[in-house]
Image (cartoon, rainbow, N blue to C red; front, top):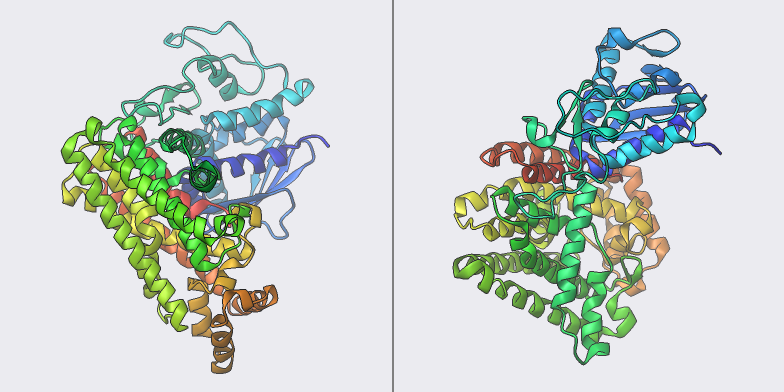
Length: 552
């Protein structure tokens, strides 16, 4: 089956959601409640709507669209290259948009935003280039003049193919000419895009107030650099089978790379070198994986990242010892900064790490206590408090603070400026993870389906459910959640999930996470206004918006 224009559009929106969440969140705000129907010249159809801060694209015809947009083959590239005013582009049966005036203008603003701020991402360019090259009889061959000097101001982009922006970016900024460049912060952060304005293209560093980057690419590079460091750190000696190979297990299973990216980006945002933050980022990952090993034992979990948990595969004794070893190795990794970062910064890192671990242990104790005593707190604020301590500090707040310390920042006031924004973002992120455990694909979440319900995790959804049901149902639920993990069945978890769906607990949690994340983004812009607008700050902004846009 041929690759359709509608599928190209869906893949573009999906790619942007993963790579440029700040752009998607802004575009979703522009689109608002509009339901958009898209009709393409190849006969395919698509739909676009906003849900909270997400853009949801699909290959179908919406039943009751608010606005309908028509793109023939001539006009298709205008989704990629909105260079002129709407009046200059709209032609009947070519590019046409139908709907109420305000809705049409909002749709146009959405397209324009996506075109000007997203078309510079190389991954998006590759999608559109691949589509065009499948249909040379329709769109013509890509222009391929000799590549001019990139500094030549007289360069005129090639014409005639109907893909003006794509041809320009291909020729002016070829893949082998600076696709990845070092920054003041080192080589972790990636210069991955150019801004197209319909006439020329400018680097992100030349455009005030518009600093975007390919978040997925940056996170992958940060994760790979830290994995390389962890591999170097783990001793190559005996007992391998009973200790050092097990230490390698959880870190090698992957992850999103969120914590390393926050650490590198914050260090660079304060003018530090990202390489100075490598060992601190590695230490956080080692602590994280040590916590996971012990957490899986406490929760009696069966799977972690789609593989058997360590205690299931090797026994509880070896798993406990491996978790202890991961924590010890993390401490040693922090101390290894002394020769390169000096005494003051290393002492600052130790102070931050001790505080992070204390918060995490206190949060874990609160939740385990609730589970042991059969308590379900009545207020969402109780969950906020527990979640911030258990996961918020080491997932989002501490990585930022540690990155700043690596750059030489030890002023408590400046470090505290990260706390509230990333506290809110961390809570929203954890709520979304809790939702994914209930409604997400097992492959995406990496744990057994409905594992949180079987383990008795006190999530926002469970708290909401207990508030909304009658006393008889609450008594039944109380008895069920007090049942030990190994005595619960999958059908028990499915009954709880069905009850949550009946009272709207899942949608309540999604809406709450969106509200908290938006408040976190707002606090990011106000509390961290003192940071200069650099690529590193742009990465931090993308992560702040990532929470609001990732699919559930």
